[in-house]
Length: 502
Ligand SMILES: [Zn+2]
Image: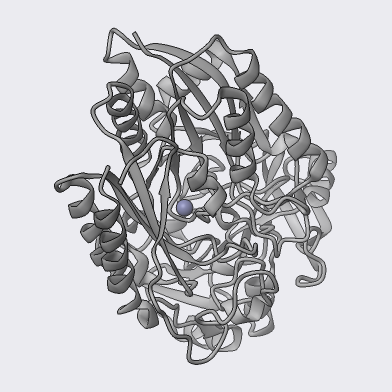
């Protein structure tokens, strides 16, 4: 009759975003509310609950869930202290349990704590002791620190990019935890650090070269003695001392296999790493291409201001360039600007206002753009994601029209890797000549399948795919593509829980 504690602490940040994220950037849920919410959406916790719910012998102990509404800058110290205290209090005050499932992202950071997940896991161990199995699911953009692996029994990671296997990842983690609890398996983990930070289309697992390494990992995970395997490419915008790429393999009591398999995955990745960059087009070249373009919608991919990667969302760099070139095509633009929204709410629908747009959050990169605009729609910014059904909160939001530009202006950043933000504010990207997409990648059907063209723009921003532009100072060096002539010598590290035998 295993009792299983379920908890979540999940956030991804860009340390290059000057705005710190805060407690209000999380949805916090406890107890039955945690269960109700996660049973209704297809994320990792939901997937894990589906496995536990299907086993009548399991008692679920829902402890705590802090789930980031969208990415942002480093987590404010006071917010981290509050969240970590709430998380550990929930672990401490829970009824005694036999096992633990944690959902984490792996790319959190605060100004002082550069491995929050590892810290939480170590503190959890101090509370629960060394013999309660802990299985953690993570995003493959997480940064797999030694401390995280040391204080868990097994790690399970996403195997898709763009991510579509949240639910399945939770299911895999839950199944593995149940096998550990049943005494069927004894996990040992190996990881290999790879000095590379990567971006671009080759990371799309269904079609790109990264998919080769993931499929190898899947073969190992489902093969003899395999329990879990995968890769962590890190969030390149979370500049912390452990930021690099890792392969990892968890086997059932076979350290030699774990190490050799992790090296195989790492080598398959390294063989392709040079291709994992984004060919970017300068702002000026973008404007030329857009002006030449005749029919159909063109997507202007602004990965540098990708809110889902932790950027601020207040870039107006592309619009500024289009205006400078007197572009007259109808253009749809998402932008975060709380002061402009306040002006719009005071004026009301139908009014014309003069406001500055952009540069309120990252003023070193973006200068305010003065516009005269008509207010077409005002909303509370509360809408449902077309991707996963989650509720996203943009805060008070205004649709402003200024000549050929339609701005959907939110008070806070929301994910823009699908079209939910536009649709929920009455805007269909397909009727525009150009649409600014603040995301590194989208599911194909969101834009690529129907757009007449896609341009990856080299704009400024705290999640730029032009990685050398960002100025990393904490990650290990030399590092591809920040440095020249980086070499790779696979050196597997082995992690075994107390009591494991070779
Ligand atoms: Zn991710």
